[in-house]
Length: 160
Ligand code: MG
Image: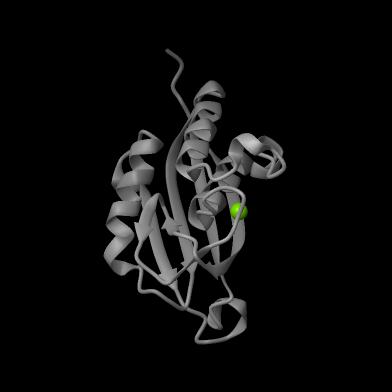
């Protein structure tokens, strides 16, 4: 068993879609970034790459590379899953925390869990997603941005 940790932050701006866990969430602001800026999936990918000791998403998907401009982060997650499989591992579980003052994410959490479980070829009950506010404090509290943290454990596949 191996453990990985990930953290990411993106700025909230007007005229961007808000995509979290591959789900488009109706909101007047969205996250700014080279890709779709899915901060939740970015934290998760960094955690998976960390568990594999394969660096970070900046190394695998540089934001200077035009092929990743506007790309769905779920497609990047698919690439990370391939690396996981190539190394002979599978996801044991993931716990992901999104830090955002608004909007309320509860109605979208199940769809996010299903998206991520499907992409990682695992069961939904191995993927936890939760959200918190920071009580108005800091950049997440003012709505300047969102942050996400992820912890994952991965297991070696049995030898076949
Ligand atoms: Mg990011």
